[in-house]
Image (cartoon, rainbow, N blue to C red; front, side, top):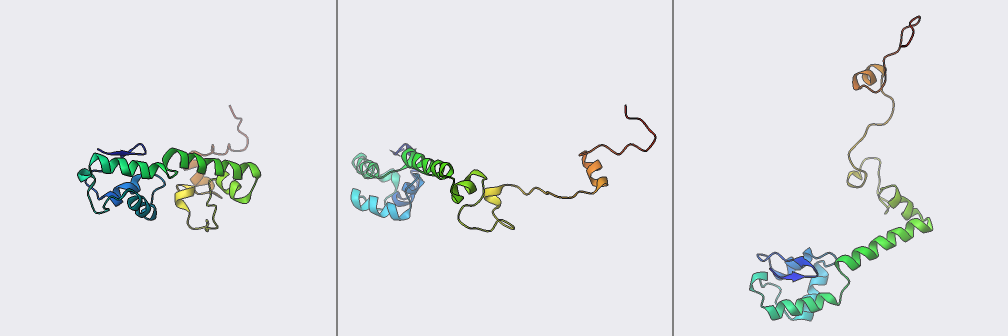
Length: 141
């Protein structure tokens, strides 16, 4: 199984599709890498020779991918938080940072729905959120 940038490529896929599994390589970058390496895009990964895999590795090394790219993105987010920018505060509160609405959407970023607000006393007692009120004249133990 060919390994490029620390990622095992799926041997049953086409070369151009398999390369997109590497973080930082999308469909546009694949075109550039394949031209640079001189490998046919429609060739399956299992049919690649050792020489072609080496050419692909060399082409990918010239780009910032995987760990380096993840670290750069993380550092950018940390910098935004330290500077105190609006985008940084949105990242800190785990909310969308690019202007999306959050009243009805943003479930991926915000997580599962949680009801916040008034709950009737009877419902709160059923849920076990508070103890039932002590009738007047009785003493708490």
